[in-house]
Length: 74
Image (cartoon, rainbow, N blue to C red):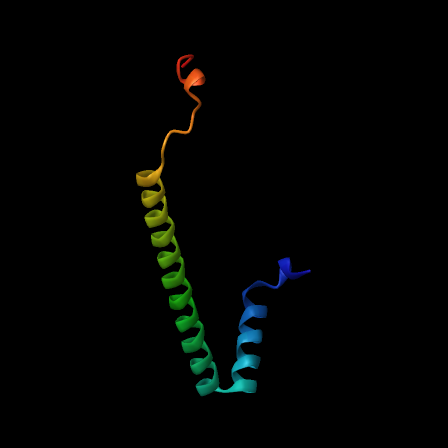
């Protein structure tokens, strides 16, 4: 259904949205979208950092729990 809109259809939609909401409302909405994207990227980066830090801590505190009789086989 949406695969044949084309450039003229998109321009018509953009003009209708601009007329309905006005330039100020759309620019403030885009500003909020930008803040949301920035916050999302920051959260993802912090999450990755926490995962990396937790992985390093786990590797440092890991100990071998293999039973003694199994260690001889390896």
